[in-house]
Length: 303
Ligand SMILES: [Zn+2]
Image (cartoon, rainbow, N blue to C red):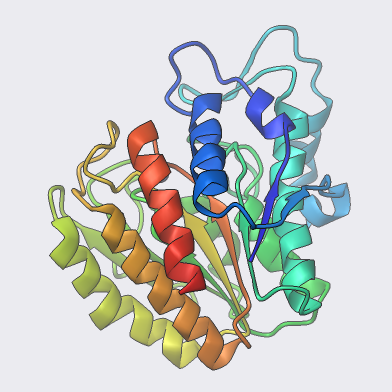
């Protein structure tokens, strides 16, 4: 296991009082360092524009990287950029690319990208929902185009549906997108009848669903679909906002649920992908939950 991060990811500032705050990543990094003192840390490189352009429009890439930012640039009601945000977004996407390269080179079988801003809501053309570049999508496209993989799965257990990741790959059978998420909840996509070209698997969960419903959805619906897909690489959108302490959602999960699912995903990766698994931090807005869940996630992955 490797950890990728970058100080720029701590500098991105979406505004005073915004739930997607630098303290989130500090909490994750401190907790992971304390629990895994021997885990090697690597500085995330910048994603290249070409890597971003595999999934994003030139308009969006230029808007996020080239707009002069005087104070704050507001992209939508929830999403804003500070002077440091372009660098943070480049490092977040670059972390996923470097992590894919590392696991494809068999340097390590697993990597965790402790980065922000999150990415899974951003579509090809629109940055939204606290997200700038869709880092996990950039990583998936890199695996397909740079490494020639034919079957890559994005597993998304963030409490919100990753509408952007789904939208980017809905017509690309080389990338499967599998998600559990609270419904109704922002962004209100991710119903079971959203199937793409047979490469989407969505399991919406009712508010208050809890551990049993969450595990049932993965055990009975999502994991069997991923198993049948036989992914050559497992990518994870690791959001911890389903935890019962999270202020933005109401799925009532425990850290142990993330440990359980992470162990299942690691086992699945060993069966089909020589163990190759790259996880990227997405949401999670309780600092207490982020500490417990990020450690539980890595415990589940390393076994
Ligand atoms: Zn979320």
